[in-house]
Amino acid sequence: MQFISQLKIKLFSKLVGVDEFGNSYYQDKSNKRFVVYKGIAEPSKIPPHWHCWIHYSSDVVPSKIDKHKYSWQKIHLPNLTGTKYAYSPKDFKPRLQKYDSWKPNS
Image (cartoon, rainbow, N blue to C red; front, side, top):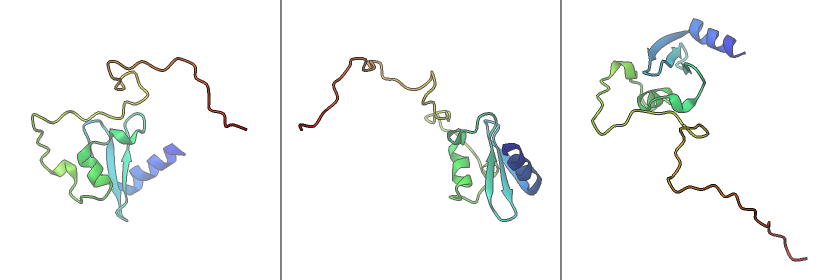
């Protein structure tokens, strides 16, 4: 099913641009916008400037604008929750102790 959807997008839509992660962005004749992810389909892999375009917040295609990065800007990272790279505070210790669940008085 996914192959058919991607084939349909590639045949009937116009390639608008590709971001720094290799994701391809398309637009069809009815102005619908699509993204074909490189690798795992993870929506948090869309950089901020493409996020605005894909959600119709901007009609300016990001590949046609100056993407000047300031020294204080960090490189975009996808959502790392559930991976070994997920943020964990230094003093975080998982709660391993058993607890007694609450039981109402009868």
